[in-house]
Image 1 (cartoon, helix red, strand yellow):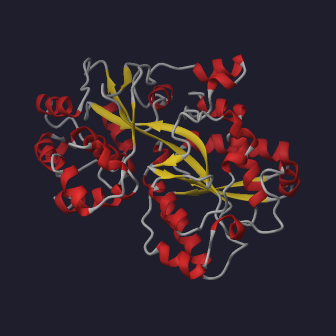
Image 2 (tube, one colour):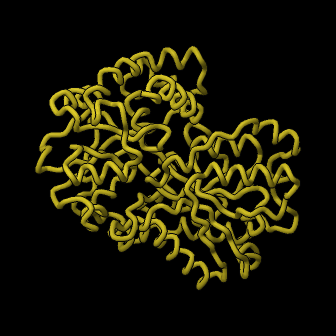
Image 3 (tube, helix red, strand yellow):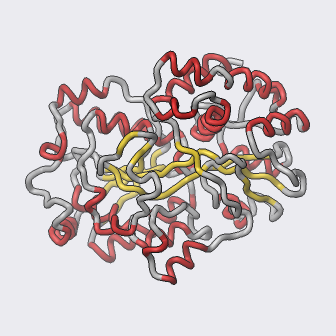
Length: 410
């Protein structure tokens, strides 16, 4: 996620497999009501969608994101007769609990969620519980434009199998101010050295905040002796071995941080403000274009810039999915297809709008749209930074739990 994906998209759902068993859900045959045309019959889907109201549950904490969703909803109404209502959420955990409760109560066709913004552990748990409608994503007309070289068919090492449609890309990006930090750290080792040279001027959000957890995963990817292990479901033995270098690193880093590591910023937004005030020398984001937005809105000075680590930074794709008990499945399909369209993706990628990375193959697009997708702005990430794959979704909970055990009460 973009703050796009803060903790709102990762949620712990207990006993989901038991829920699935109790409901007797299974694959497409039961996840597709007979009255709904399959996505392969797109004219029939569009006809069924007309007049439907789609309740799109998505994070509501970003002005630029909210404005983009409002634009997309207006377009969907004008073009397809679909009324999209943005249900602004702060934590996807509440959405998943609602879906879980509705299914347990036998609400198989009249759920309150028609489309949701998801990825990571959240998707894995819903998929394992057979609580998602599909598969449908690769049958959308707009899928032909997707860049399949990107991780659009795997979500935190979990195959998507067509149960969610890619919406945008994100990558951990750091922010600094040239007026105070002309040469930023380019690795975990350099980050620690920078903290030593600038005591009290570095930090990261407290896990389980999404950005804080992402920073931990970035360190883990660099420090672990066997990165491939992180792509497999976590086990106690694998966790102990993989994280063995991480905890001593943090024990060295924390006393050098803001407030000696006894307190942490609540969010990346707080870090942006602290960077602007000079309290911190660096901040972080999961949107490589957010620096440009922050400069444009005067939240950061014009001397701010974005950078990455030489060896790469963690990145992923975020998606939209349809719960199995959604009321307006046809409308959700039509809206998801529009979100994936060349026009909608180009508008979303504009740094003056949102600046969220596209999931499309630019070579498949008209020259005018290629140019729009290639535009940048001062403060956005201008350098090529390799993308490191997310660990398997199961590592998130284990990593956060151990961090909280070791550092959460200090």
